[in-house]
Length: 523
Image (cartoon, rainbow, N blue to C red; front, side, top):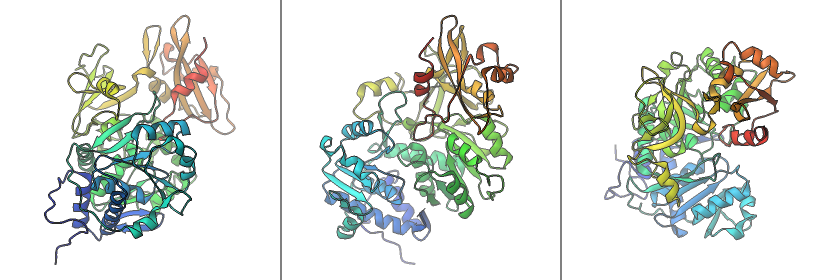
């Protein structure tokens, strides 16, 4: 059989195989006929996807994009988003997926910070950009979808400018992706992710979770977030699997897709797990093909883990952050029941340690401290923020996460909370997640968040904010009576506030800063 020569690449090209554009090209050469990506009923093979990447790279380069320039995208998940990422990587550019749910001032501040040469938007979000164009310095605007006044229609442009350029020389330490943090602790910062970070993250995920070319992966998490892009989409493609991409998360559609495509692996944040478990046909859905459900983004309440375990769904709770590209710890499914609540052991590409408040390394199990990470998947730092980058790492190059945790006597890690979220009441440390795990088991509660508020006598007091099930009622006295046999007295809530729904980031994390502002500002 004659060798397959992919368009736009010569045998003289000696690109590093750990670089994003090159490893995808090699995967496409290895299995061009296999299904790579399905989006809203349309499936591309690896060969077809590679051809689209080549043509898109030609469009970007002809428009004037050079090495190190930024290509930004704002919009819902779409198959073309992954094409854009690899196409930008082909010509040495940096892809910047934008969080479309941000307020316009927040969004504009990110675009101004990244200074993209080209901004691509879907038809739903182009009008939002138009409202602030006078503040932007982009040289080119491309629209994904029908033509819009003032925007080049990307489908027409690709058809007219299909010349495929030779790939740029790229290296493992070249920045290929800017992922902006969610901004729950301040203004969003762009984590600089290079080719080597993505390669290391992919390898760790593929090997630890045994991704392979027979896997069918479902992703409805946003591609502007490390979980949706780096934890499932890119590893699936590197392994040669079939990625099912949804435009956005809908619990009903997600559950249907699990059955329809016989999905073998997927990823959900805790909020998504909750909403899917509340579907009427969750208990009867045929999920027998699902061999791995990876979850992270926040500690998963134990009652949710038990709900999924009862359905026979292997849950792998992981831990990671934008600055670690993807996962830093992985709980393999063999331990999903035995180590309920654990986020696992260190990934193959990450070193991990705990330090106390003085920076001393914690060597004893069950002693809580700050989680620190080091390794080839850790981001280089923040875009245009040298001071914040310097503060991110200690003198030995360890990334200080700001997350609290501990490990048990078998080396399994458990996440407690953000260090800043810890409540100190009467000199005792109270970790909100511990209290939340107990309170959320009350029959009236759908969700609960615990924060600290000022207290004249004890320094801080425990405050519970709960969303109740339809028609349910709950008083503070009833909640305390429910929890008092399982929690120390100083951990019991002194206040209870009822709300309809929790404020969330776009990735499903509860925004505790908003809850503190609303409920903990008074004594």
